[in-house]
Image (cartoon, rainbow, N blue to C red; front, side):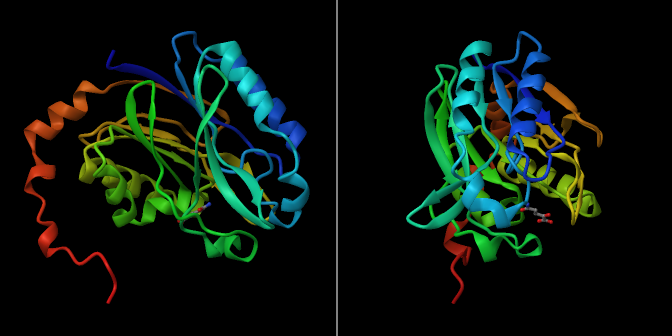
Length: 262
Ligand SMILES: NC(=O)CCC(=O)C(=O)O
């Protein structure tokens, strides 16, 4: 089966209000079309960028309700990101939850975004975001990570077909969001599924414009800046077709690429 139907939940995250945000996610699940098999949530959906309350928020169990929704609606969930606390440090962490309600993978954001003070409150991850979901080699990264093509390429070299991006991307850089996502799709010949939030927090207004982009770089579905669900069908056979048409993976010259700073 090469076809998938994906839904990005483009929610308006209430600053620091875990209960309201869980309710918003549950309400959006109720509106899913019955063909959807994969649901994507935005970055830090339980609380937004209320980073000075991380201690309290990381102690809430926000995943049990999402596992229940995954089973109830029989969908896999790229569960945006949530704050996790380990050994006295906090991470911006993306869980993958299967339709059986199991967390099968975690990715910690590798590039922390100074303009939103992440480096003051969080520790960066070290491992890549590649996982297999229902037999499909996939990868997931978080927001600012998409500005680092080397990081994305490192993962795409593992024969990945779909790149998920979860974000809280402000509207003042909407043009960067669109251009970077399209570039990552074209240069890696992958589907890009990007879920952003809408609404405001005390410092930013967020862009929305969640997008699904095919491996040729065509935007096959794009949301506006309102709350809602962006749904799109993808056909993984397209990845192989595009890679045959322009065989960039065969034509790479890694012997010439200087990827380590000296
Ligand atoms: N939450 C983020 O990582 C935001 C990244 C961002 O806005 C950017 O311009 O990069």
